[in-house]
Amino acid sequence: ETGVTQSPTHLIKTRGQQVTLRCSSQSGHNTVSWYQQALGQGPQFIFQYYREEENGRGNFPPRFSGLQFPNYSSELNVNALELDDSALYLCASSFRSGSYNEQFFGPGTRLTVL
Amino acid sequence: KNEVEQSPQNLTAQEGEFITINCSYSVGISALHWLQQHPGGGIVSLFMLSSGKKKHGRLIATINIQEKHSSLHITASHPRDSAVYICAVTDRSWTGAGNNRKLIWGLGTSLAVNP
Image 1: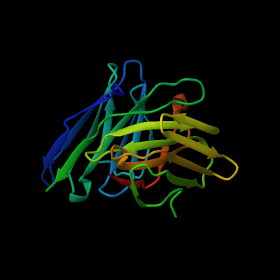
Image 2 (image 1 turned 180 degrees about the vertical axis):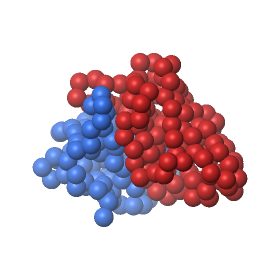
Image 3 (image 1 turned 90 degrees about the horizontal axis):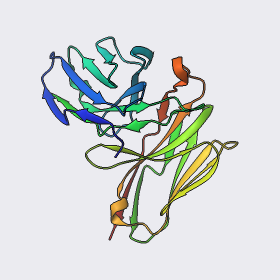
């Protein structure tokens, strides 16, 4: 049990729609990272938020956006959904401790775009 | 070529066998993770290593920083060990505010342990 939860567990959308995925981090974790894992692939880094600001971004278009809130929750928003957006979306939270932050993963949200 | 390579890609073993999964990486790292992912998706962190060796129950992880190589060993394997095992490294060259770093992931090794 990592203390990181995600909702919903599963979601089905159609092309062109918008989706919001949610992640609730452990109390005190000031950093959250989002990853996309397509079927049969390793997770790909989408972006990271630190203290409510975007802290770095992977190779994802602007229609992928995020928010981080003071209560340690965060959102991943995807606009204009495409079929290729079908994937498992993982969030991972961490807190600065010395020179490294161990990341704690949520169970993921499986998004299917039809 | 991926910055993190794992081998084998797929592995089938009989219950009780000793299993080794290998990970090689080409970037400078500050730490290496071994993670486990069961069908359905949730990821569990098994180990975080920056040097040497760690052991937890039947799992052992080793890392050789000079050779940029790590191994995950499972002793006395059991069908419940069946999962995808993923190696990920913390990219030392990528820094953002707050000293939080990005993970670079291998593609995973799919392990099936038969009774």
